[in-house]
Image 1 (cartoon, rainbow, N blue to C red):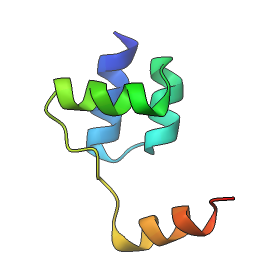
Image 2 (image 1 turned 45 degrees about the vertical axis):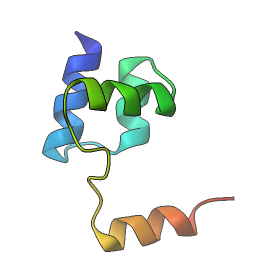
Image 3 (image 1 turned 120 degrees about the vertical axis):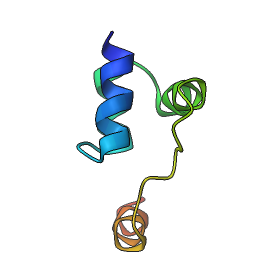
Image 4 (image 1 turned 180 degrees about the horizontal axis):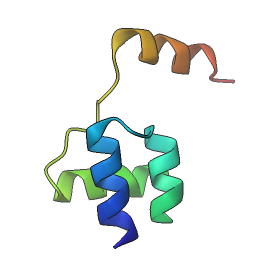
Length: 58
């Protein structure tokens, strides 16, 4: 149930992928696989959001 909820919240844009993975109790890679099973695109970011995430990568 947690995975389905996290997928839906991610799909709606309510939470980011990392937070959704945390809620689902999965690694980010596992969460991306879950998105595929639920037929949800793993890229839900706008260009601005993607730039912000890339700026925060260490």
